[in-house]
Amino acid sequence: MKREDVIQRIIDEKGVKAIPVLIDMLEESDSETYELITDIIDILGTDAKKYLFEEFKKRFSKNNFDDVVMLYLIDVLSGMECEELKPYLERMMNMYSDERAFPLIIEALLRITKDEKYIDILSTFLDDTGDIQDLAIMAIAEHPTKKGINYLLNKYMSNISKSEKALILDSIQKMFFKNQNLFDEVKKHPASEEIVEILEWMLK
Image 1 (tube, rainbow, N blue to C red):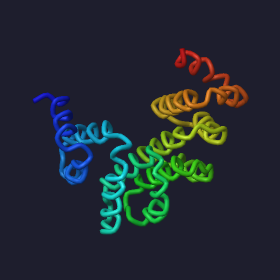
Image 2 (image 1 turned 180 degrees about the vertical axis):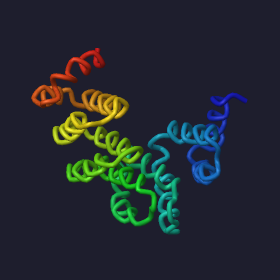
Image 3 (image 1 turned 90 degrees about the vertical axis):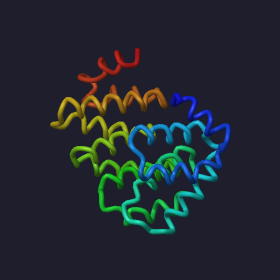
Protein backbone atom coordinates (compact mmCIF):
# COMPACT_ATOMS: atom_id res chain seq x y z
CA MET A 1 0.00 0.00 0.00
CA LYS A 2 1.33 3.45 -0.92
CA ARG A 3 2.34 5.89 1.81
CA GLU A 4 -0.45 8.31 0.81
CA ASP A 5 -3.01 5.50 0.95
CA VAL A 6 -1.88 4.47 4.44
CA ILE A 7 -2.20 8.06 5.67
CA GLN A 8 -5.64 8.49 4.16
CA ARG A 9 -6.89 5.17 5.55
CA ILE A 10 -5.79 6.02 9.10
CA ILE A 11 -7.36 9.49 8.88
CA ASP A 12 -10.62 8.10 7.45
CA GLU A 13 -10.94 5.24 9.95
CA LYS A 14 -9.57 6.77 13.15
CA GLY A 15 -9.03 10.51 12.72
CA VAL A 16 -7.72 12.30 15.82
CA LYS A 17 -8.53 9.23 17.95
CA ALA A 18 -5.49 7.55 16.40
CA ILE A 19 -3.12 10.09 17.98
CA PRO A 20 -2.37 8.26 21.29
CA VAL A 21 -1.40 5.10 19.39
CA LEU A 22 0.64 7.03 16.83
CA ILE A 23 2.57 8.85 19.56
CA ASP A 24 3.38 5.58 21.32
CA MET A 25 4.67 4.25 17.99
CA LEU A 26 7.03 7.23 17.58
CA GLU A 27 9.24 5.98 20.37
CA GLU A 28 10.24 2.75 18.63
CA SER A 29 9.73 3.65 14.97
CA ASP A 30 12.31 3.65 12.19
CA SER A 31 12.85 6.83 10.15
CA GLU A 32 10.30 5.90 7.47
CA THR A 33 7.56 5.09 9.99
CA TYR A 34 8.43 8.24 11.97
CA GLU A 35 7.92 10.38 8.85
CA LEU A 36 4.62 8.63 8.11
CA ILE A 37 3.32 9.28 11.64
CA THR A 38 4.42 12.92 11.66
CA ASP A 39 2.76 13.42 8.25
CA ILE A 40 -0.54 12.07 9.63
CA ILE A 41 -0.40 14.33 12.69
CA ASP A 42 0.48 17.30 10.49
CA ILE A 43 -2.51 16.68 8.22
CA LEU A 44 -4.86 16.42 11.21
CA GLY A 45 -3.65 19.91 12.18
CA THR A 46 -5.47 21.97 14.79
CA ASP A 47 -8.11 19.24 15.18
CA ALA A 48 -5.38 17.23 16.87
CA LYS A 49 -4.38 19.95 19.35
CA LYS A 50 -6.49 18.70 22.28
CA TYR A 51 -5.32 15.10 21.86
CA LEU A 52 -1.67 16.09 21.45
CA PHE A 53 -1.76 18.21 24.59
CA GLU A 54 -3.35 15.40 26.59
CA GLU A 55 -0.62 13.03 25.43
CA PHE A 56 2.01 15.61 26.30
CA LYS A 57 0.63 15.98 29.86
CA LYS A 58 0.62 12.20 30.34
CA ARG A 59 4.28 12.01 29.36
CA PHE A 60 5.20 15.04 31.45
CA SER A 61 3.59 13.56 34.55
CA LYS A 62 5.74 10.42 34.22
CA ASN A 63 8.83 12.64 34.58
CA ASN A 64 10.85 10.40 32.28
CA PHE A 65 14.38 11.67 31.66
CA ASP A 66 15.36 12.52 28.05
CA ASP A 67 11.94 11.86 26.50
CA VAL A 68 12.57 12.67 22.81
CA VAL A 69 8.91 12.23 21.83
CA MET A 70 7.97 15.00 24.26
CA LEU A 71 10.28 17.35 22.33
CA TYR A 72 8.39 16.46 19.17
CA LEU A 73 5.10 17.22 20.92
CA ILE A 74 6.21 20.66 22.13
CA ASP A 75 7.40 21.47 18.61
CA VAL A 76 4.00 20.66 17.12
CA LEU A 77 1.97 22.26 19.94
CA SER A 78 4.01 25.46 20.05
CA GLY A 79 3.51 25.73 16.29
CA MET A 80 -0.23 25.70 17.08
CA GLU A 81 0.44 28.42 19.71
CA CYS A 82 -0.85 26.22 22.52
CA GLU A 83 -0.55 28.67 25.43
CA GLU A 84 -1.39 25.97 27.99
CA LEU A 85 2.04 24.53 27.24
CA LYS A 86 3.99 27.46 28.73
CA PRO A 87 4.14 26.48 32.44
CA TYR A 88 5.26 22.99 31.48
CA LEU A 89 8.00 24.27 29.19
CA GLU A 90 9.51 26.34 31.96
CA ARG A 91 9.99 23.14 34.00
CA MET A 92 11.29 20.94 31.18
CA MET A 93 14.91 22.14 31.17
CA ASN A 94 15.77 19.84 34.08
CA MET A 95 14.35 16.82 32.28
CA TYR A 96 17.11 16.53 29.65
CA SER A 97 20.78 15.69 29.84
CA ASP A 98 21.36 16.37 26.14
CA GLU A 99 21.95 20.11 25.70
CA ARG A 100 20.42 19.98 22.22
CA ALA A 101 17.02 19.91 23.93
CA PHE A 102 17.53 23.36 25.45
CA PRO A 103 17.25 25.52 22.28
CA LEU A 104 14.20 23.47 21.25
CA ILE A 105 12.46 24.23 24.53
CA ILE A 106 13.39 27.92 24.37
CA GLU A 107 12.18 28.06 20.77
CA ALA A 108 8.79 26.69 21.86
CA LEU A 109 8.57 29.39 24.56
CA LEU A 110 9.43 32.06 21.97
CA ARG A 111 6.73 30.83 19.59
CA ILE A 112 4.07 30.91 22.28
CA THR A 113 4.97 34.10 24.16
CA LYS A 114 6.66 36.21 21.43
CA ASP A 115 8.81 37.51 24.31
CA GLU A 116 12.18 38.73 22.99
CA LYS A 117 13.95 37.71 26.18
CA TYR A 118 13.96 34.21 24.71
CA ILE A 119 15.87 35.51 21.68
CA ASP A 120 18.53 36.74 24.11
CA ILE A 121 18.68 33.28 25.68
CA LEU A 122 18.90 31.59 22.28
CA SER A 123 21.75 33.92 21.32
CA THR A 124 23.88 32.39 24.08
CA PHE A 125 23.83 29.09 22.17
CA LEU A 126 25.38 30.79 19.11
CA ASP A 127 28.78 30.44 20.78
CA ASP A 128 28.37 26.65 20.81
CA THR A 129 29.27 24.44 17.87
CA GLY A 130 27.52 21.79 15.80
CA ASP A 131 23.90 20.90 16.35
CA ILE A 132 23.30 23.25 19.29
CA GLN A 133 24.42 26.30 17.32
CA ASP A 134 22.40 25.23 14.27
CA LEU A 135 19.27 24.72 16.36
CA ALA A 136 19.71 28.16 17.92
CA ILE A 137 20.10 29.84 14.51
CA MET A 138 16.92 28.21 13.20
CA ALA A 139 15.03 28.97 16.42
CA ILE A 140 15.91 32.69 16.29
CA ALA A 141 14.55 32.80 12.74
CA GLU A 142 11.15 31.59 14.00
CA HIS A 143 10.35 35.07 15.36
CA PRO A 144 11.48 37.77 12.88
CA THR A 145 12.68 40.78 14.89
CA LYS A 146 15.43 43.39 14.61
CA LYS A 147 17.10 41.91 17.69
CA GLY A 148 17.11 38.41 16.22
CA ILE A 149 18.41 39.42 12.80
CA ASN A 150 21.24 41.42 14.36
CA TYR A 151 22.31 38.41 16.42
CA LEU A 152 22.46 36.35 13.22
CA LEU A 153 24.30 39.07 11.28
CA ASN A 154 26.89 39.42 14.04
CA LYS A 155 27.40 35.66 13.99
CA TYR A 156 27.76 35.76 10.20
CA MET A 157 30.58 38.31 10.58
CA SER A 158 32.50 36.06 12.98
CA ASN A 159 35.02 33.39 11.99
CA ILE A 160 32.61 30.61 10.96
CA SER A 161 32.49 27.99 8.19
CA LYS A 162 30.78 28.30 4.81
CA SER A 163 28.07 25.84 5.89
CA GLU A 164 27.33 27.91 9.00
CA LYS A 165 27.11 31.07 6.88
CA ALA A 166 24.75 29.29 4.47
CA LEU A 167 22.46 28.30 7.34
CA ILE A 168 22.40 31.88 8.62
CA LEU A 169 21.54 33.20 5.14
CA ASP A 170 18.71 30.65 4.82
CA SER A 171 17.42 31.65 8.26
CA ILE A 172 17.54 35.37 7.44
CA GLN A 173 15.69 34.67 4.20
CA LYS A 174 13.00 32.90 6.23
CA MET A 175 12.72 35.96 8.48
CA PHE A 176 12.27 38.23 5.43
CA PHE A 177 9.32 36.17 4.22
CA LYS A 178 7.63 36.90 7.54
CA ASN A 179 8.75 40.52 7.87
CA GLN A 180 10.10 42.29 4.76
CA ASN A 181 10.89 45.45 6.74
CA LEU A 182 13.89 43.63 8.20
CA PHE A 183 15.78 44.13 4.94
CA ASP A 184 16.40 47.74 5.96
CA GLU A 185 17.96 46.45 9.19
CA VAL A 186 20.39 44.35 7.18
CA LYS A 187 21.43 47.33 5.05
CA LYS A 188 22.42 49.24 8.20
CA HIS A 189 24.61 46.42 9.50
CA PRO A 190 28.37 46.14 8.77
CA ALA A 191 27.68 42.75 7.18
CA SER A 192 25.46 44.31 4.52
CA GLU A 193 28.20 44.87 1.96
CA GLU A 194 28.89 41.16 1.79
CA ILE A 195 25.41 39.69 2.07
CA VAL A 196 22.80 42.10 0.66
CA GLU A 197 23.55 41.05 -2.90
CA ILE A 198 23.34 37.37 -1.95
CA LEU A 199 20.03 37.87 -0.13
CA GLU A 200 18.55 39.87 -3.02
CA TRP A 201 19.45 36.98 -5.35
CA MET A 202 17.91 34.44 -2.95
CA LEU A 203 14.68 36.45 -2.71
CA LYS A 204 14.15 36.72 -6.49
